[in-house]
Image (cartoon, rainbow, N blue to C red):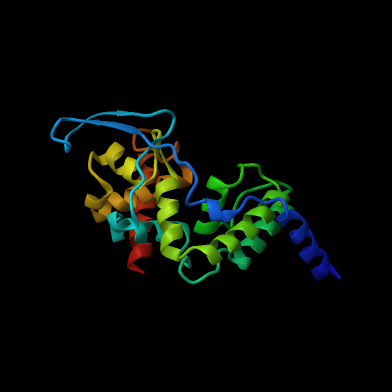
Length: 218
């Protein structure tokens, strides 16, 4: 009876959800770039609150992909959008602490949260996130989902997406990032203000970078 009730609740929630098929085709605000006459030298970059340049998956080096997966979702290429064990652990923590804490999110769920849903913390929003994550996995390949994720997430200092982050913090395009640079950038999205290279927690940032490298080695 409980199982049927849960399925019924999910079906009721699912009927009003946005279509995950629109994620790739939606409008994404990008920076306006002004180049010199040569067409290669960037003179100015005009942007609002989000500084972003969307790039293709082939322009993202492997070290960026691996560092991100190592920190955010090590089973990314094996699960179907969600990890039931992580969700159960997060729900149990919410019950014990009597607080609506975030947790247990895969890369696919994080993409859903950043593109299709609000940051509201509630069980209903979490259920929507789970449904949309599963639907997203049926419509796109893992590489497509990772590409959208790396073009979407915030890295701090108004930089959104790995290309803007690479240019903001290292003055180079993402395709030229080295292993140490990629692992440092991968450490930022979890808490962009706390881990900011310009902040007062650079030791914590260095520690998270080292952890990323160790996870990549494993």
